Length: 314
Image 1 (tube, one colour):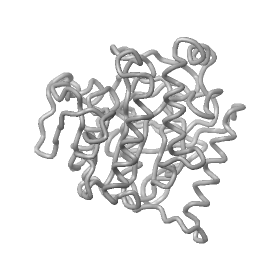
Image 2 (cartoon, helix red, strand yellow; image 1 turned 180 degrees about the vertical axis):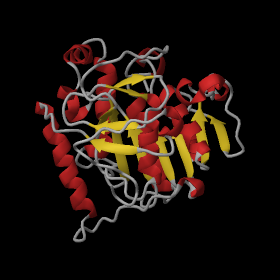
Image 3 (cartoon, helix red, strand yellow; image 1 turned 60 degrees about the vertical axis):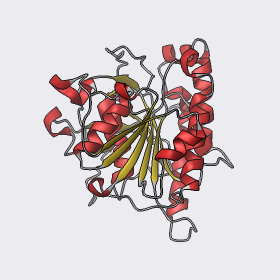
């Protein structure tokens, strides 16, 4: 175990009750079940080490502890984004959400428990009406005091447009640079298993959907990732973590987050949120500059979301 409580054991799995999941977390590197598309993940890890090595000119931004953080969540009224909001507030962070409809800022089913669906009210929460596709709206919520950003955008293409993920994330990158926080703040971006070089880590049935009915959304997800992972991408010089979760569920947090090299399984949105906040709050978070695929069930099942959102809709 490292001093920051991040376990990277290849031999064990951690299980815990939902009651302790948020206070005792472990990121576990699963046994290598290498898929043909996993070489890019390994290459990303090499690149990350190079970026933060003593001989590198790039210095990894220090994390800001939750109780001293002032973060912005884009997609904060969605399934995963609302988990990020509620969990960050519980840890003492100040949170700002940009939302097209602020009335949708409600407690999620995973950590909401009996209060699921109730409005989120907290003195440390600010919800601003706006659209991530509008650069001026994004610039209103990202300031010089912002210490971290979560991008957890989603929605059906017919409702939000074919390029919303890429356009909105570009606006976020530009706003971070304009605010002068590009070297000091971390950013976690939720995409999906199957995006980028992780196509072969998705189950075969899902790969068929990616190539057919979900082609448009995955084109947008791929372009969104390239903003950080592609050569010359405008977000490549930020302290980012591109998070690729497996099949998203709405259950309570399990505290189990497996970083998967092979075929991924399912994971609760609450656990995805915990991982994203780790990227912002944990000093020794090991996946800065990388694009890890994560699941709680390591490639053994693919559980469809029990809620109204799609299995891959943030």
